[in-house]
Image 1: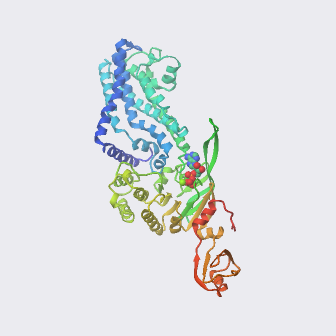
Image 2 (image 1 turned 90 degrees about the vertical axis):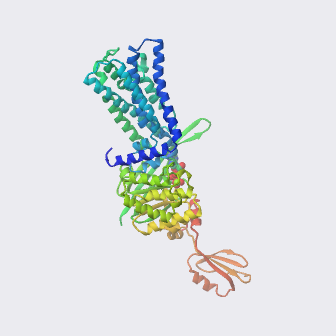
Image 3 (image 1 turned 135 degrees about the vertical axis):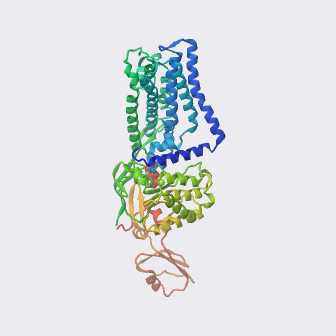
Length: 269
Length: 322
Ligand SMILES: Nc1ncnc2c1ncn2[C@@H]1O[C@H](COP(=O)(O)OP(=O)(O)O)[C@@H](O)[C@H]1O
Ligand SMILES: [Mg+2]
């Protein structure tokens, strides 16, 4: 973001957004509460799983909750901040994106701020709480390094999930009727990273965990926090790779987005 | 002369899928804009007209940085619209008739406040421009109503204001009067005329209502099938497409043989009514030749731009191309 003065403009847009969303106070309140539901369900699922098994992918319940909590915290935050980018398909299909492009601001932050779902704040807060409780309950042998990792890992995961949102949304520039296609990677990625990856197997695991990099933003940082060895034998420092995976992912996302902008065709009128 | 809008060989192609039979679809490339050259100077007010699907909106979208051209060169205010989009956006105002720039759920007033921040306009400047628009466009009665509740005419007046609050040098208006009631149309036209009178705002306007053009634009660009087919004044268009002033003569008593007049073509010869198109002679010369007849009434009909353009659109032959 080249222009610092633009920040004030974005801030103004955010305020306007807050004003128009909270204009319907009751429905905003209901959204706020109901949005905790989905994340609560994810966490509940983990408890249910441990009702049938004591160990899941080499982790016990408390340890697995660190993985789930880390994902819940990061995904919910990324979803609130950039998840709405998926609405780009609507903007592209209807040509409403034109109005975004004639304003003196970058398209991506504008679009994100145009419908920033403030009611998802509750979900992000809930995810963060789960993460904090899991960290406290897992009996982690805290060191300065681990304390740092406990903060860096979710931050990197937010960036990573954000990049996934942007990439999947950009598909709409080429393929207007992409529909639910992107959800396989965004919500699918969340579900994938909610559990220790060792529960998955085969090409599916390799593709999601290593080729697309989902394992490096949740599972491996959690292992490093817990001081556990990787069942398939990757070295301990892999747990620190989250930023190294997230930043290139963000760069790739920016590139694809920009390419998509050039491809935007608007609609006839 | 300072060229504010310049384009050379500007092109835009779209790939469209066309149905062929039940299931098959073929891809076809259509050139919506097919080699357009433009040179518009500062302060000019240009009407950009053409039939539906001629490529008007597509051209404006390329000039405003919304669409990336498929070919050719384009510059507005010395900037490259796509590459320097955000810088250019600060210097131009855009109204796409069918799309809104405003926040649907917010009162007009709040939208303007947001735009002030987005365009980073000093508060005093913003207030002064808004005051002017409020009085010229009669905004006061609906300034506090959410945009989604405004009538089309009110919204369009609101859109125009939104496009002007940052003091743009160039204004692109795509169908700003479409669907408006007569009062709103008048308000918009009067406002644009006043804006143009200042002489430092450049205006490019597409419209279906030729009265907009006659009222506002000295210069007319006609586009058809993605190509500019006329660039000049309205008078030049009349001359080129052979629209003539017509002299209508009503007679007191029937005439056996209407007089032949050199430089004028007899187009209607009723028993009590003669109509001549002036093809060289002046109206005075024609009347001198008819001096012996007993007139009941006489009128001179100026050529109608609607007719000319309609003929242009239907591909009627060009009588005397320059
Ligand atoms: N986004 C688009 N995708 C495909 N074809 C388009 C698109 N936009 C415009 N066209 C086509 O390009 C041509 C010119 O459209 P447009 O510039 O909107 O015309 P006008 O504004 O003069 O009515 C039309 O044939 C239209 O169907
Ligand atoms: Mg159009």
